Length: 303
Image 1 (spheres, rainbow, N blue to C red):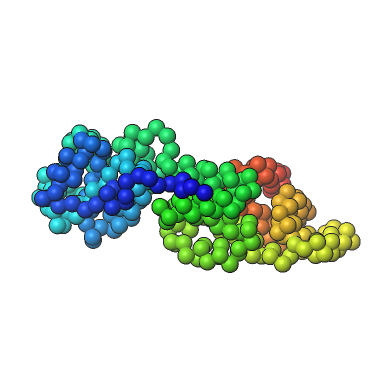
Image 2 (cartoon, rainbow, N blue to C red; image 1 turned 60 degrees about the vertical axis):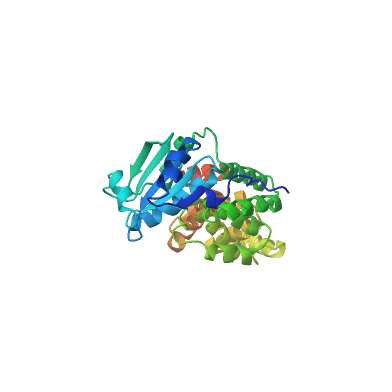
């Protein structure tokens, strides 16, 4: 498969440090060719350490449509004074040799993306966003090998992309590589673990690990026979739901948990509801089954 991402300027050309001697060439003159973002920072500034990598990722994802120049204000106080930098981090965008936009302080990554989109004049998604969309489509179509290839290409360019990490983990789960999926998840930056894409993949992996040996046909038949003899045996019904989930019979697994909640919602410290929430996390908030099951759960809980 041909690489989907690449072909643009090298990262070293897109992100660099400057000083008073090179500022005019790196920023003023360069911005007459393409937009230049200037990040004023200092090593002691905590918010700078968080903001800087986010801006770098966003800039490199635009494949040469915008550049990032970093100015250490401790080492370049003359530049900071010229631009009247009173607080850091401070970020300015230059076009045609002049500052045209900017912000001060740390802001959410979504706002960083929007800021850089404005500066770069992008009307559509970045190449990385396009690649992730393609990989997701491949995964939904059942082509997990090809989807994994695309996710890995994204991660080669943007190692902390949450959507690509989550997608890669899901591909490993589906192909049975639970050990690899666990190793990848355990290596994720703790600051990223709560992002929706990774949190969902984490839930999916935990569920797969729980049911790795529970979904063979003999076990399913045994559980169903037990339940036929005692419909109020909630532990057996719970085990059946877990086995069905492991067998990729998601709708049936959800049905069994909802049945427990309908019969005795407080059973085993609300174990059925808690497991159902795990299923929602694993499937994602927009999955049709999640939407439908949430409605049924609400009806049971608030009836």
